[in-house]
Image 1 (cartoon, rainbow, N blue to C red):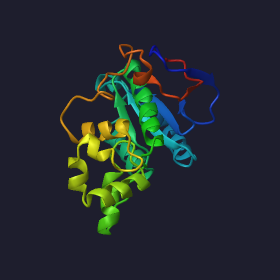
Image 2: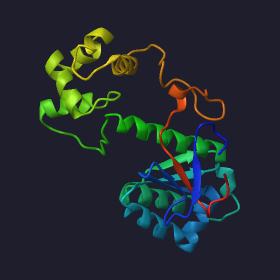
Image 3: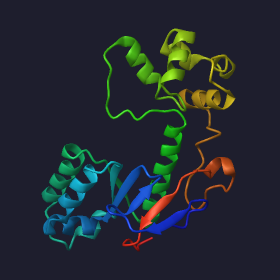
Length: 227
């Protein structure tokens, strides 16, 4: 993939082209292949298998509109396929312009998974109606804040507004909130530059352990040779 500090293993996968951290399956298609797969019927068979997988699935479409000019597939057919994949089957669709950007997207997925594993929750469109539950739900959107820490924040400060307005030292007074988490919360709700996540990712990324210690592994299907 040409990105530093990312381990890529080549292995046969039963579905998809890449497996990230044993949690996400990535199906990568160029726009040309996407169009052809609509015509030959492969697309929906693959997407149904991906939707039924125990892992989270994502489709990355790679390329620009000019790549499909000579294919002869109507724009409406491609839009209809995207609606089926994203809305009916519930598979997120991401776009990239070339293989390098696709690689960066996959690495970013790994970073997000690591962040979630540190205490966040997967939200999946859940919208609680009870006020306290809604407040806790919103607080869990903060970096490294899971259900327990959200409850402690709400109990300590009394409201979301007070919690997100608190200083780093005030946040650290809450059990389980150390300096690292407090600083990340302050960055998330403030306007200052992030000392953690503002660095670009890709070939130019810093080699420091803090910047790119993913503690994750990307497995590449041995049938996908593009990058």
